[in-house]
Image: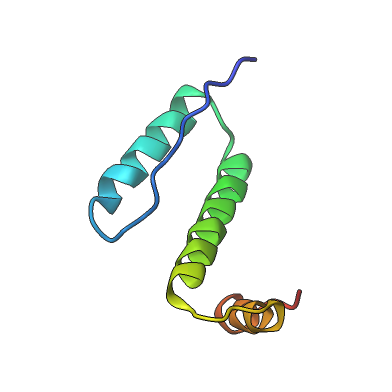
Length: 77
């Protein structure tokens, strides 16, 4: 199976409904399963969160990043 690479822009607060619609159309066209969609959505939201963290927090050390992740996601890294 050949999968076309599609780059989704970052969620910005504007036009997020369009972003979701494009992502869902892509998943449908590529016949991606619900389990695979769940993994992709989780990865995308984590990446967007991390980029936002880097843009908004000064002096982000490894320890500070870990604390932010534990606080936000409730996970231990």
